[in-house]
Amino acid sequence: MTFKRPDNRKFDELRKIEAKAGVIKRADGSAYFKIGDTIAYAAVYGPRDLYPKFLQDPGQGTLRCSYNMMPFSGSGERVRPGGSRRSKEISMVTKNALLPVLDLREFPNAVVDVFIEFPQTDAGSRCAGICAASIALADAGIVMKDLVSAVAVGYVKGNVIVDLSKEEEDIEDAADIPMAIIPYNEKISLLQMDGILPKAELKKAIEMGKHACKKINEIQKKALKDKYKI
Amino acid sequence: MNEDLKKHITLLLAENLRFDNRKSDEYRKVSIEYGVVKSAEGSARVKIGDTEVLAGVKLEIGSPYPDKPDEGTIIVGVELLPLSNPEFELGPPSIDAIELARVVDRGVREAKSIDFKGLCIEKGEKVWLLVIDICPMNDSGNLFDASSLAVIAALKDTVFPEVEDGRINYKKKTDKKLELKNNPVEVTVSKIGKNFIVDATTDEEKVIDARLTIASLEDGSICALQKGGTEPLTEKDIDDMASLAISKAKELRKLL
Image (cartoon, rainbow over all chains, first blue to last red; front, top):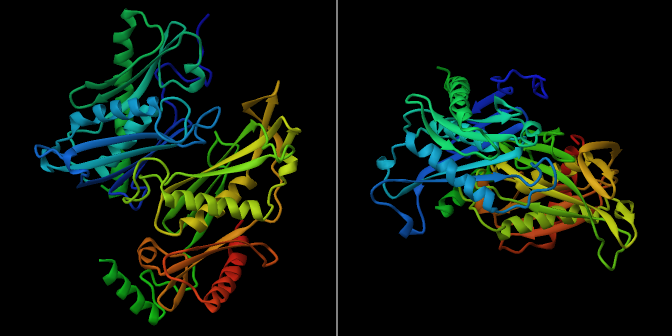
């Protein structure tokens, strides 16, 4: 029996994506990134003064990322506000995914804050958050080597598929492999997995993820070009 | 710095001018969108100028308070997201978030918008809890009025989910809508010097002497009040502010 995706997508097909730069007026940079039913907003504030002072790094600026699901954004019960262990971990891996494209030596002692919020989620939120954050950082005028793009690749019923939906993620033994790619050097700055995956399929999964991220990267670039009318 | 800002704003107000060219009793453009979050049982987005607030309602089944065994209730929470304003910080709700949540809660509760007895599933055991969360997306001032409007809109949008074996199946919605009557509309009037203004921007909020949030009903009666700010108000101030708020509430109500 061949596996059919619940929403009839091809194995390498992404959900519908919408991206927009400059959606939050008060922020120095911001972005909206929607993939399927997952909606991410990112706002960047800074570089600005970092307090308390002992946190300041005279060698280079500091990047802080915060991943937060709004209380009504989960597919089931209300998500309790305030940081959870999960959101703290995702905030950390998000920061690590973005750091390689930034050069923070330009603003010692300062901080760049990235706040990522989700009004609605349907799998792939950390990846959507990274995509939104990349656009927002560029919109804030932070010098970047590239826009980081991210997607979750899955291994479901013997098939490698890109951009898992919640329904696919919930299939028994499905492997969920969120990854972030730095397109210009094809390096991987986020890689996590849960589920069961034969070692031989990992290479294929990363290959498909890279390919999907390049498509996402074009959409991210377009969002910025649209805002600045280039 | 706020003193210079205050001087400047006050000088302009004396000429009936504001930074964005509005009259003192004029709102920025207000818009309401319903059903903006699929995962919520009810949701709405309200924009007042550049200020944008999302409100979402999640339904839960819980036990009633012992003194009200046949009543469900509402729980209102506000997260002043640091994404929406450079001055907001991560962490537990600040006093500003708590005040905002309580003022919005009070409006809905005292207007008796929701029939709490109608939320009873099994007396003394199970009732519906309406957990309403308010998330500002961009704070360019007047979160009070935007939030209360967003909450009423989100409640209007609320549909009960399916209950199977006493548990909620959030994936299935019924066609039963939440019934609302007597919607309160909150209008915050700010006092700067001798002037009263509505729909203050963040700059104006920084220099107000006092503010009065007035929740009023369709018939013009008042159902909740909250005075904020450090300066006291005279009786006449309050009377003028309430009249202004009630007349502005009538305009806002048309948008719901």
